[in-house]
Length: 156
Figure 1 (cartoon, rainbow, N blue to C red):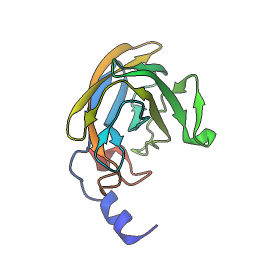
Figure 2 (cartoon, helix red, strand yellow):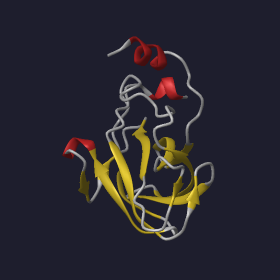
Figure 3 (cartoon, rainbow, N blue to C red):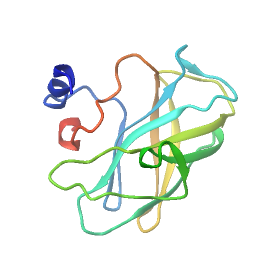
Figure 4 (cartoon, one colour):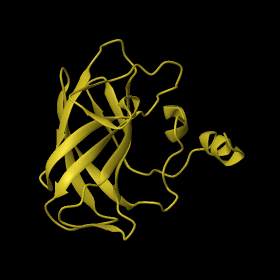
């Protein structure tokens, strides 16, 4: 791990995305990555990055995410080498060590969306229900991505 990554985990970076709470599940820094040109065009498949965890013993599962700006939203897990999954268990955050190993892929955008604007994503959990999250669209590769595997405490 390089010194810049270590240093960035020990300071509070500026907020990249949206935070939300649904039941006992916490969503942190939810943001969509636009392609390098800074906008999502019709037919694009942008990635949504976020950290998801719970601080209670009440287990829950992310069942899906939907949006009106695309045909589908795929749940993807880095633990499955980027493969699509049907559900993602909400991990327990032990000792502030949430590990953001999941992300979303928005499939076939139906309209142009510029970086700096927001799209609404509705997260559906098995027990907690649903919540809409206004998600900022960021230009990919602009250096604002959070370092992998920082604790949720360093993102607060």
